[in-house]
Length: 487
Ligand SMILES: Cc1cc2nc3c(=O)[nH]c(=O)nc-3n(C[C@H](O)[C@H](O)[C@H](O)COP(=O)(O)O)c2cc1C
Ligand code: SF4
Image (tube, rainbow, N blue to C red; front, side):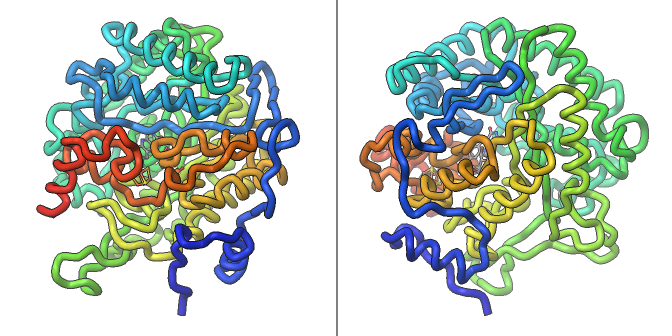
């Protein structure tokens, strides 16, 4: 019988939190006291092969669904980037997913990287740096990237209600969820070649704008990630590991040729599971049930995942992630952002939360187990590749204890940089405050309500509706409430 989920918002003492970790068997390091100033592990600089970072705080890319229809920036986006700058983080991993072409967009309001958006991208970068200087006093040791993406299976470039999937292979579960029949066209090798060129062009724009690096996104079920699991695809982009990573190698080769000096990073889902679904039988009446794996008969060995054990596909298997990181080393890519799974089919793996988004399910496990899963995968990979710079993910669920865990994880060498995702929407400067000895503003701590995911699912811009004053009481908040009531 599993323990009931402990609501961390009600836990005041770090000792109680540590006791809960022990009873769960969740391996998560946690310091009792926060150290601040120069002695803080989070304020230690990191220099490796030309990358200089003045502290250990990073912010993850967080898509906003608020670009103009032609892919340009908006006021709310500018505000978000200022807030990312004010976090005090010295590594800005991509700001947000920016599409390499109109057709690559995950929603009709996704930021686009193209010659006509260059000026806007410059504004975003400058606004971020300005705020960053105000917060930290200097932009020394600050590294800013742009996350380049093609949304693949999750393209919706023209209408938020109309999926326009671009797929590499037939997936027995995800195809059905998207109502794709056996004749739905697969991307051809020539079309893939054109997409690779889009990445080269986008990287050239990012370089001209002054970004220090681009992330070639390989996570969360989008196209880069789908290449890694294209075991069943025929031809030069599918089957063997060599073929499934050809896309990455060709993107990298072109970027090196066309944007010399631009650094490259990769955000990768290092493990996965088969898709989960809400178990409606346990909550009849339309309420979301707890998540259960959607297994169909005849699917073992499972051939549609990256980082899964084919014979037990809900178990992570880091063997291929290890090969992938070896490849990154050979390609002289040292910036790695470790994540897992996908928000579309296993959100509890990807962003552990107490409250599900509207298209999710109740947590099938204590979300701390999900945090521990990602942290331990990162730790194992860090041990194998000590020279790569690792950014860790899935810390927001730790809430008030995030600083204690972050400090311990860096001090004990589990990870190099602590990345903030949702917490960067509600309280971007949490780790800066903690590691500089400033008072912690507990009311701004993300409680994983998932409104930032539900809003875009309902056609609204993302943001922290419950805690960020920009959304509280706004028309958007009223629309979200209404949309949630309608189900
Ligand atoms: C609203 C929202 C938007 C996101 N957008 C992106 C994105 O554009 N690119 C990306 O790689 N991950 C994206 N993520 C995932 C986060 O970067 C992060 O991996 C996830 O939230 C887990 O980290 P956390 O526990 O700190 O929130 C998004 C997450 C949320 C909630
Ligand atoms: S809406 Fe706010 S509190 Fe809820 S998960 Fe998103 S950032 Fe956290």
